[in-house]
Image (tube, rainbow over all chains, first blue to last red; front, side, top):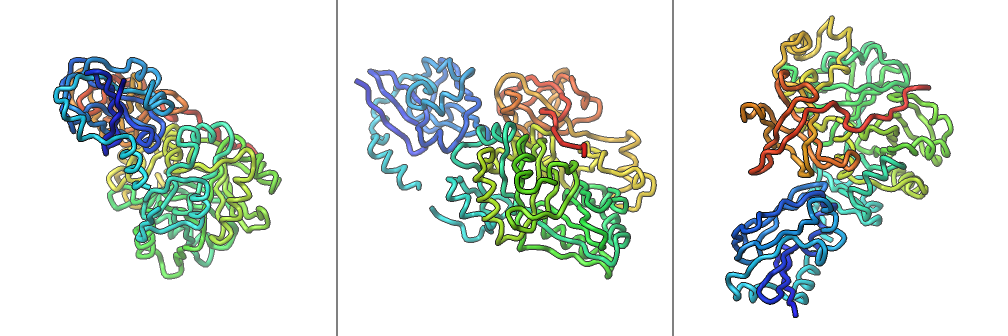
Length: 125
Length: 376
């Protein structure tokens, strides 16, 4: 049983047990356009909620991706270096960025539910 | 969707919105960054078929004098190109220079007939500065007319000629950098065989109120799709073409920028344009920096503002002025300025992208070969 949560900065968190999978939302990939490169942190890196976790480069610009949670990176998506376009085609599945531990379980509670996030995106026009 | 009322609009804004364009502010205009297909697809479509661009934000003006010689000499006082020798029906690329040889703007100049008129196309962001600069320098008998009621379309790509030939067969035989008055779909147009993508293609100047109709006619063709500013930038980068305010500005000279081809022989000998002393010195080899092409190893793009380093010393030796991922080459490419010692294609370089130093190589430009049609 996994639970899906979102940030206002258009990252998602999929929590399976005590492992969180992080990526960017479908709205985010549409805004960025064609992704050509993703700069990922090293496995073992400590991430702090709200601080830079990765950088996604589209054809037009580089954009920061922020850590939605505090914790330690335990895996990065090895498919992204060779096939970054998977972020566009499958942002919530094959296009995930990294997996991390969750230092403070309470941080999940401040993230948005899918329904709240969808309503938020509606307001962005 | 919210509209910023301080932004100007081209006559095609409704057509862009109807095509699903993502509109962004650019040079004071609300312009399409891309349409529903996205930048990558629009880029590739232009390289393979024909992309239609709205470039109506660019400034269109005319110099009007009593005869060609008078008008040409007035313009030659401001630019290093041979305008006197520009034949009727021909177009030329040049630069408005400041007294120290820096580039105020880059300009396309075309001569329609034998009537003392020269048509100019300047960059949107620089238009008002350019017009004030020219007006203050022109002799009383030569006037500058700014045409605010004009639109400009660019049809670019290997199928551009066949598309236009269906409307006006004579366009297929035009040579690169020539210009012709024609009617397309019953609309008076001034068509030049030129562009900003490295592909064969045409630029079509016409009255603003006719632009939506021609746009609809051309986008109705199977081989044509609308293409936004995003792909315009990746296409011109692959073609090694300068973007004003990025690759060239008031500090760079045409020689540093690799635009010596546009500085005419006669003008080099005679001088008589702003900054002639600097250009002469630089042409003789006394030059501080040169615009170069760079191919970055790996897939991470190095963009404008990234430092270029000498791998032997780790020292900063230059700066990237344009860069991004090249869809056609399939690798990151960039252009920037380096001292002549490091400006040779094949030179090992590094580029600083945030906290990483990426290996790179100096490269000849264009990154993608030009496909201009020069033959008649």
